Image (cartoon, rainbow, N blue to C red; front, top):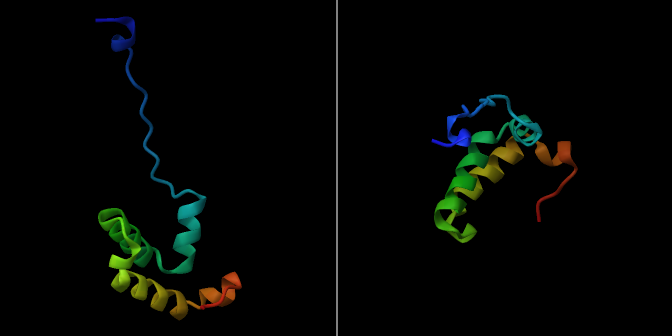
Length: 74
């Protein structure tokens, strides 16, 4: 066994949300966002995620995030 293999690995668990996670959580649509991201990761094609996108848009509108973020729907 080499010296490298003998050294214990210091693994730190990070359960705290980072700045990106906090921004998503603040929208009130974190669950919908996660489902949309997972759909895209699984399918590789946003066009196959229309139900998830619609749920995210509905949530976004219900939480008035366009006003909060000064964006508008096309």
